[in-house]
Length: 216
Image: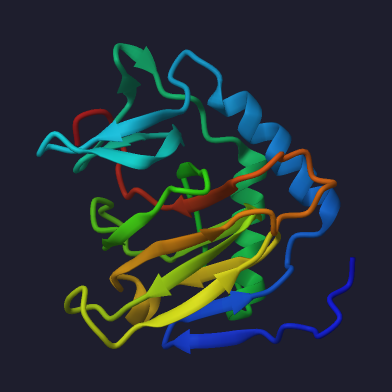
């Protein structure tokens, strides 16, 4: 469905680009179906436990490399991590070209797939466990989430809040690659009814790990 009032593309910070509605309904349905398969065990979707004993409210499954605070591994509880598909890397390169005009040789090999129910949040953090500082590519599916893009120094102001709807693309690299960011709110019941997701929000982020082998 075409928005009554089109949402313009924006650049909320240097190196950060928001492209509303970049993924059409068919592409969104394809990604939701893929997420359902990736979420299945073994090495499926789970709540991540933090070193201090807390548990993240989002549920996560990883592709290519498994992330747990604060490192990447090739296995999840002794099970190989799910592979990172070539078609998803192609999608990431097309997204980067949309944002920056070219893909810059982008070679993502990690995806974090996060599922947010109505109560889930993501605290402000930096994506700093990768060796590569290539851009992060983020796709939103389902309910709208309020994405907070902060500064690179700390979790305080200044920041910008963006309402990310289903199909939206966000890329942050360059001067914003190490910006603190998070999700402060989910708006239940705002997602489309025809992509196969019955409530909640899926977020898929692609990264280049910069790793070449296990244990590096």
